[in-house]
Image: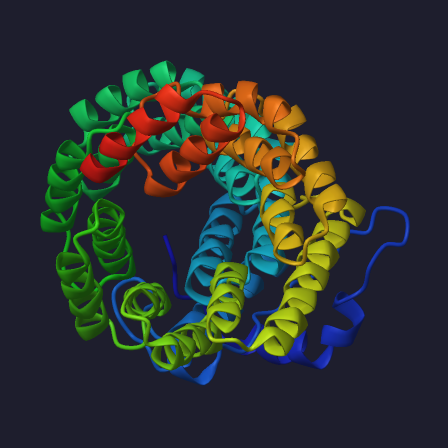
Length: 430
């Protein structure tokens, strides 16, 4: 997807960068998105996915030259969007790079509204920014153009899962794997099996996904971390730690493997080790989940001041990203579910409920969203209000241990002693 072109335009762009990086006050769109310097560790990473930082910069410069000299060059715009999307995944800076990619995707669609790659990328970008309904809609448009492409069925799986259309997600996953049985289709089958409470089947599919791709690539090690998380949810911490360690060996400094080992350290009550792992992960990529989990560790370690300080940073950061997205017509980031949990950590239950309901209004059939609303009502002491949301959250027979624990507590508080007791053996089998 990436191409090599002449270098000379780089000098022109560099000299006139200040003139390109301007915002239209009315539309709030940016005319030019330069690459942002990577952090030291990932700048040194070189593999088939990241290519190598110097080569990425060279490709970027060459693509900008082609786009600047040929306004009708759609292929270079698609290639540049691909580069931005990969940089988002590598660095975690989805807010910036998703907006950058969307700009060029939209330019392609303005000239050709039926461009399959552009429609697929627009779906992917909307899903990345949690605009799940929009992402699903554009995936459906792409499918109408090319109903034999496995990638678009992956988007349809993701969109339907997030919108709570689980039956449709299963059907699309079956179609996807029939077209292309690979790491992407197997991993989605694994996730759906997990949603339906089939942990052995989920683990089997995730192993197949890992075996279908070369070790060390980002997608492979991401998948290996998901396998570790499945073992972790089952309570098999030994196997979980093994897979996190393998991922870290195959891909040094891999942030999500570091976070996995941090959770293992929490289970071992080695809080300082967990703090070190989370801090290391946070130093590599941008991902609020690392700091969100680190807050819990600080609280467990009795470091409330650090927990409170980090909570403010996380909440302010997510609110800022959300506002920046709303001010930009290209794309906006929804983070209400994440903000609901962040506000729970500082006991601001009213704000937590506000964000939980905002997310629920967008996707009322999603089991995770219903779990969030139920838990916020539980924390507010409104147990009967929590119950209907909990029932929806349990409808797929998920055996996620956090969900089952919360279900037991809510059932107990609403006088459903038998259901609360029934959760305990279910939890032990999870």
